Amino acid sequence: MKIDKGCYMWILRIALSLSICVAMVTKAHSMDQIRLALDICLDNPREAYAYTLLENALKATIDSDGSYRITNSSYKMSRERALHELILGDSINVHVAATRAKWEVETLPVRIPIRKGVLGYRLLLVHKSKDFIFKDIQKIEQLKRLTAGLGQQWTTTAVLRKAGFYVETGVDYEGLFGMLNRGRFDYFPRGLNEIFREFDEYKDKYPDLRIESALALYFPTPSYFFVSPRYPELADRIRRGMEKLIATGELDRMFEAEFGSSIKKAKLDQRMLFSIENPLLTPETPFDRPELWFFHE
Image (cartoon, rainbow, N blue to C red; front, side, top):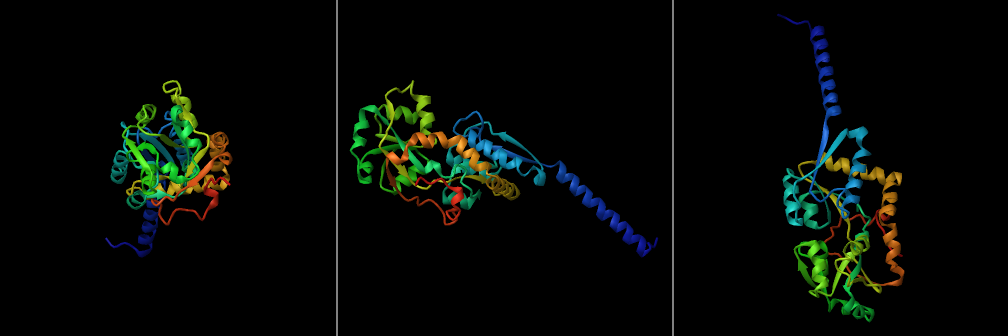
């Protein structure tokens, strides 16, 4: 049967319209699935802020990208395991970590420091029997002669070792507090966003631990959202959502609500601040955007 050219064009237009409608309906009903490690959740005080920030970035893009669903894997992951799983993109497809070049090469980093780099300001948790040692320190070389305690796979461990510090490592975060209490090392450097909460959490179990009051360390330590390379559209969505939070001032408000009190308690202007480089950062680190960082003046 011969089809009239005009009729053929009419059928073609109808088919094209239907395909566009189907695509729009599919997009409208699609849902981004975000899978996180077990400990990236609201119940973990160390990561509740990151979880809330991620959710707010996703909410900011609902109109353009549709709904989303966040779930957690059934187990915790070491840093190395998290990177492996993130590359695969099955059990997790988004993670939060202090950046390293390897992570930025092998995954899709959203290069917006989620805590504005406040983690880079380190105060020292010490045993009361050694507190006096730190009062006499005037130069960073004196601090380097003492031994820091840190996690085996932590970014801070690599940074301090490259800077010439002595570091004793442990495989378990909670176990490090016990190691400090038993004198396995001299101090436990903690982000100023962490140390006051941790001190309150462990003071009954380890009543001899103290927050040292005279010193602080600083090295740039941005933490990013990292996305599996299998999910470039999700990485772009999170980036756009974060930019919206910056533009509206929401990121600043969240930062102040979460960390403002700790920054005041730290009294950085009353401490001797030793600054060191972070050789693990890439040239893409957004130092050209001062609005993304907290800097003590």
